[in-house]
Image 1 (cartoon, rainbow, N blue to C red):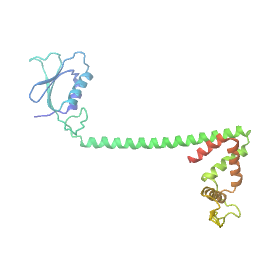
Image 2: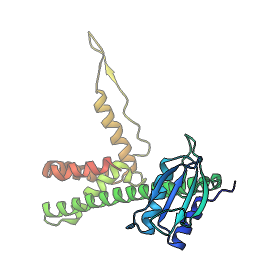
Image 3: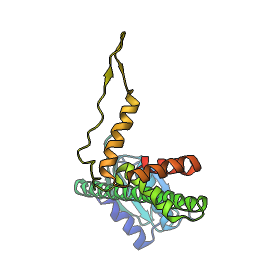
Image 4: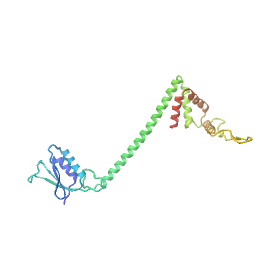
Length: 247
């Protein structure tokens, strides 16, 4: 028994303008007769494709040029194998063609597209974060200019202070500071208990101050500007702190 590739049937329908057909099962019983005169070739192809999508087996497809199908009607008959397994994701319009290579090609193309989309999404996310940070800093500059009458020196000092506190300061040491050690926890004796001179929070602050003094030659001015900003414009201060936390 000779079998015909299903794709060939679609090509033949386009070439010969077939719209009428009858589909028979392996026992010769008719299962579908397309005799709608209003069907275009595309409609007929869609009708045939829908039948094959929902039916599995070996079928005989007979095309004709007239609506009526009499004994004298000339039919063009083709046998196709549309067998499907439970795990078979048959590509529509391919039929019994060996699709192992095509499946791998489709999978590789899909993986490549997914990788490309993920890369683009990551790049867009990074770009969006950068733009968001730039807008925040620009808003900070404008607000500080407005709040301080356009004093660029104060603005730059405050921004420098913010940057220095979160890794933006230079590594230039201050004279006399290079050998400065972090404060140690001391205790004093009383008649009853040994009580620490500073609590954990103060120790944390002291350690941070020592590190900043080593790395930022303008630390004293910068930390003063931050304090002024916190007192005079808490809104801008909070925006700036939020920006620095995101770095």
